[in-house]
Amino acid sequence: MRNDDHQPPPNARRKALKCMAWAGGGLVWSLVGGVPRSLLLGDAQAATAAGTFHFAQISDNHFGFNKDANPDVVSSAKECVTRINGLPSSPAFVLHTGDITHLSKPAEFDLAQQVLGGLRAPVFYTPGEHDVLDETPGANYRKAFPQKTMGDGWYSFDAGGAHFIALINVLDFATSGLGALGAAQLEWLVSDVKGLSSSTPIVIFTHIPMWSVYPQWGWGTGDAPQAFATLKRFGSITVLNGHIHQVIQKVEGHVSFHTAMSTAYPQPKPGEGPAPSPLKLPADKLRTALGVRAIDIVAGKGQLVVVNDPLELS
Amino acid sequence: MTRLALILGVALTGALLTPLALAEDGGATVTIHNYAYEPPVITIPKGGKVTWINKDDTPHTVVATDKQFRSPAIDTGDSFSRTYNEVGTFGYVCGLHPQMKGSVVVTPEVTAAPSY
Image 1 (tube, helix red, strand yellow):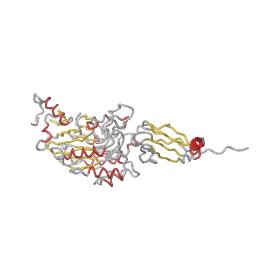
Image 2 (tube, rainbow over the protein chains, first blue to last red):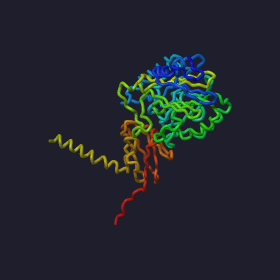
Image 3 (cartoon, rainbow over the protein chains, first blue to last red):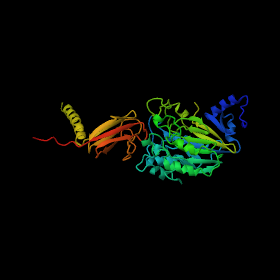
Image 4 (cartoon, one colour):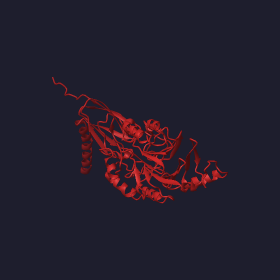
C-alpha cells in the first residue's frame, strides 16, 4: 500500500523500521503543493508500485585497488552487478558516478569493461578523478566507455518523465581544491534546461558531492551554487554522486543530495581522522559498507524513492 | 672474515654513492607520507631535479599549480621526477587529494667559486 496522502498510518514507524531492515535505509522525497517533504519509506512495496520508473546507481569500483581495505574489489563489484541485475524491478538503466578505476590504467578499464559489461541494463557514465589520471586526462576512460557527450563530457537525456544531467566536476579538481564544473559546462546547463517545464524532475549525476560535505578534503564542488542558481525554478532536483564512499543524504530547499556507497572500500566519516584514507573494517563488516542504490520515479508525483542497498545488512 | 669485509665494502660503497649521485645532478627528494609532502618546501638550484617518492598506502600525484605539468598516478613505492630549468617558486598539489600542497624553490645556478 502506498501512503499517498503522506499521513503516516498508526503502524508506520514499525513498518518503516522493517523496511529499513530490508533496504538499508530508504527515503521518499516528495513535493506537496510546492513544499518538499521527506518520509521514511513506509512500505517496501513502494519501490515496486505500478506506474514507477526504475533505475539504479553504482559508484567507485576502483578497479586496480588491492590494498588491505579490500584486496578483492573485483569480487565485490561483481556481487554488486549481480545485485542490480536481481533487483525486484528491473532498472531501465544504471548511472555510474565515477572512479571506475583506481589509476586510469588501460588494464583497469579492461577489467571494468568485463565486470560492468555484466549489467543487463545500459549504463550511463560520468568519470571520477581516479579515471582522468592518464596523460591526456580521460583518454583511456573515453576509449573504454565511449558515449555521445558534449564539451568535456557532459550530457543529458530524458527518461521516466525526468531530465537526467551528467555533469563532470573532476577535471580541475587539483588546482581548484574542490570539484569544479567550469564556465563552459555551466553555460551549457543554462541552455540545456531552457525549454523544460519547471515541474520536470531533474536528476543530476556526477562524481564529487555538489554540496560542501567536507571541503578540507575536497568533498564539495566550488561552483555548484551557480548550477543551482540556473536550476532554481525547478521544483524537484535530485543529486546523485559518489567520491566519498559512504551514504550521506541531505535536503536543502527543493534539492535532495545523496552520496553513494562504493563497491570497493569505505572511507572515514567527514573529518574523522587525518585523511580520507581507505578504511579497513573488520572482515565481517566490509560488506555492510559496500553496495549499490535503486531509485524509482513515481509517475506524475515528482517523487523519487532512493533506496540504498548494501551487500550485507549491519 | 673475507665475507664480512665484502659485505662491509658493498654497504659502504652504497652509502657513499647514493648521496653523491643525488648531489651531482642537483637532485632532491620529496617523500610523500601520511598525505603530506616532506619537506613541503624544497630548494634546488636551476637545472636541478626533484624526485617524489610515494611511501603512502594510497596513490598520489604531483600537479603544478600553474598547470605546466602533471604526473601520472604515483602508486605506493613509485616515484616521479621533474627537472626545473627556471628560477622561481613553483607550487604543486596532489591531483587526488588537493589538500596536499608543496612547493619547489629554484635558485640561480651555483657558479664555481672564483680561484685566486
